[in-house]
Length: 82
Image: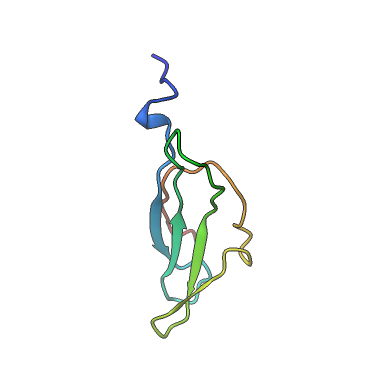
């Protein structure tokens, strides 16, 4: 069975992961932006990566990490590779 363009499974959904992207021992935040609903104004969206400043604040490091580009996304997850 082919999924139609209107199928909920064909839409891109947002997600969030807490992970230590830079290996400093503190959890950073990765936000995966979804997609506008059909019929609404489409706006380009990118991932957002926020670095933990170790003082309760976060800094946007999306561009520095090379994630400031449009891409197809469907949630997110994280893991640790050794």
